[in-house]
Image (cartoon, rainbow, N blue to C red; front, top):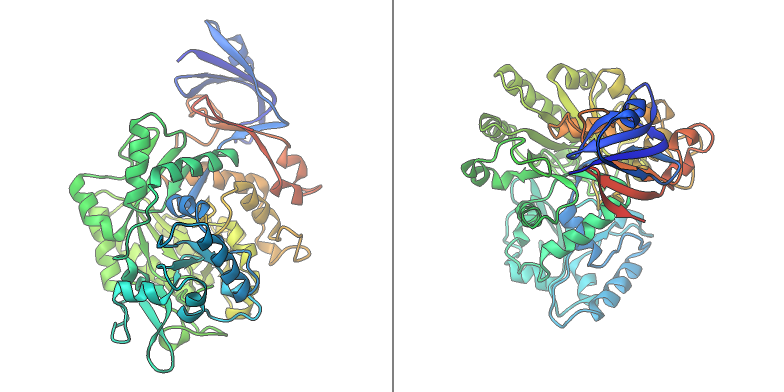
Length: 524
């Protein structure tokens, strides 16, 4: 690759020293910056970068791209404010499809409906009686299925609840069509989505590049891994992708020889993804005390997705095979369970990357354990502002550290930020805005929700670049300094100039161009 001199008056490097005005790039990496870059001899091409600021490309530490890609091609019920409105959107979408084609995804959220009723198969049958419909909730922890889907999957009143899941039943014992947590897998035998995943992922990739993401840690399964591998083999993979291994695919992945960090600079093997509980919106996050409303599971405290001895066994199997670990934990009881298991793993001498995904509600006494055990908190700031009402309704004033970014950093815990898209939008500037303000897009609540947990823009960007990369096992990307990969974005505004004067405007930042390895990957 020829040398390229990139110039701009304000290139934020990611270091405390701040900005430079030039980057010399060769073979995907930064060779020099500033005066040294300008003074370098030899043949080179010059590119004057657009916009108000250039900064390192962002890394989404937790994103479901297969799910996001399929959502882009399916019905979106997230904006519905009533059950009837959701059913109307579904009817409209179904009318655009060939007869008999099944419908998935959905992103429905009954917590936002007025009234906040729990849907069932009968209501779904009124909209789509003649095709299989199995709709994911917005948080991905509940499926709303119609009668045809239940029948095709063989789910009846005699179907037992699987470990870590619940087949919701009516007063007579019949399934209602709501399947929580591991009960969702009862639908795995249904026909696959008829649309190939790769073209959907390519469309999703363009979206991610357009919002400033140059790399991601993908949390989805083997279909996504295979599609990305095919794209990479064809030279069509523009993002840097770290793919996780799902628990159910652990043994085949070990037999195949996958190890943490194996791959190359574009496509790498990431951690094994485990679940310890569900989600607050589905009432399945595992808490130390009962939900204040609509309790689920034993004693109304949510659902533990996996018995502790089995979880520890699975984690040990993974780390002994040279794999890193990322475990979903939202409730305070779930976080404690994961930390207990991680403590055993560290005592046994394993030094790989251990992450907790979400870490939303943590007992204050457990926060220092993150640092003591070297556990990375992989968190999603947009969840905080989206869940304000849910937290107050379901957990209330209980003494729990909730979305406690400042407390985590104060305790020396390493943060990695992401979106959990499609649960939230994948735009990282939404996350940066939420992290700095703890406010919704409409500036509520005034002053921010629990403003003592706000973090600075420097801290948030570090966690969305360097911290997120480190959580994926990479230290050679995230800053614009010599030796680092030349992944950067040009912005229409300078977020640092807005942090104090107009922090709301950070959310509306537009990406004008995205460069990966010094190659233009997106241009607005």
